[in-house]
Image (cartoon, rainbow, N blue to C red; front, top):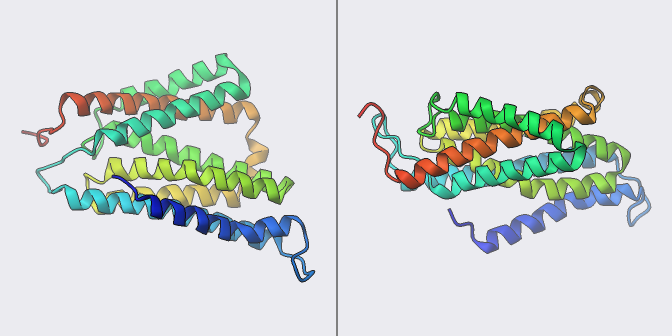
Length: 254
């Protein structure tokens, strides 16, 4: 799916507008001298970010719903670009984990996540089988952690939290599009459910940010991030190889 540049520009502008009250609130005083409630700004920004990510994910679902005839006996896979996106997201997560706590923890957790994706690769409802489920589970975990991290940053500095959320939203759009693309061949209900679940995980992580942050040490966060990266990298690589070797997969049971 190719997203028009105009749509991207509008999304970025809309995000900036939505985050503006939060940034103003960080300075404690608006143009007329009244204070902005930080909690309201945080909730508005979190809600808008989740809505924007969901909109891009649903657009992916609609796109594949129009171009693929998905029936009970025919399960086409999505384009190879979706599998590449999954693998790239995994690589980025691994690189981020390395930068936080070093190589040993990242390698161990990354191998564990990759092993899980490999073990479940042949089980699942999607034509991408267990790889789609592994990607969904990994990104669900990632989104919840992202929500908690943003909440903790926002608690320390509303300005930094707003900036972090803006950058995070662009990354989260890619994650949502990837999951929507993996589940679109199953049915619209599966795809929509997966897209919505990601946003709910993010919002839940953000709302429980203080409590979650107390339970998650930097080592645990790094291990989870590396595990997510390993699972996504393996799942994306497996599916990309399958898409290249068999661009028009046969129906299951054929």
